[in-house]
Image 1 (cartoon, helix red, strand yellow):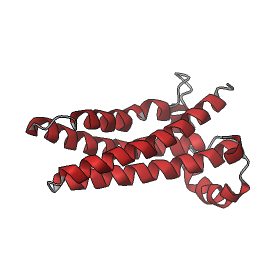
Image 2: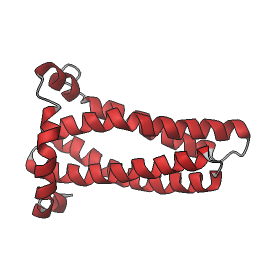
Image 3: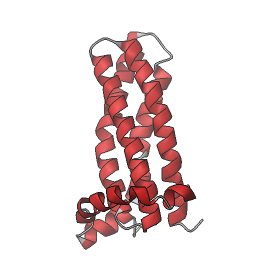
Image 4: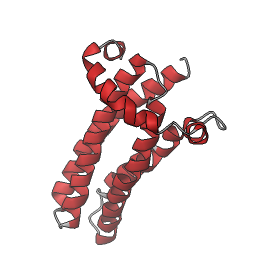
Length: 163
């Protein structure tokens, strides 16, 4: 992780993302809410449970072949894709307040999350088109990408707490 923090090659991406991310926290009340000033827990850390939980529950249901479980898995994959949007926005807001090294890790984290969301969106589309096997396979690949991203996110969260 420390190598990523020191990787200056990520600086152009950081510089490009800073202005739009900074606009998310221009309002003091919104910044306080997103940053978790009242609770001590940034909103992003709470919101990640929605897509993560939906996608992993879908993969659990994928173990069953009955039509009800398949419909529920499809809906859960879609729920994960939809809830990834506010999760990402809250993450960008939190990222905008971080130091340079954390922002570098965050760019990689965001890239992996973006890839995971696209893979899960593909899974959702495949499932909706009746291509369950493809949808299940894509979800498994998406989960691997998501876990790598979550590791980076956890690292950034522990760095924020000074651990």
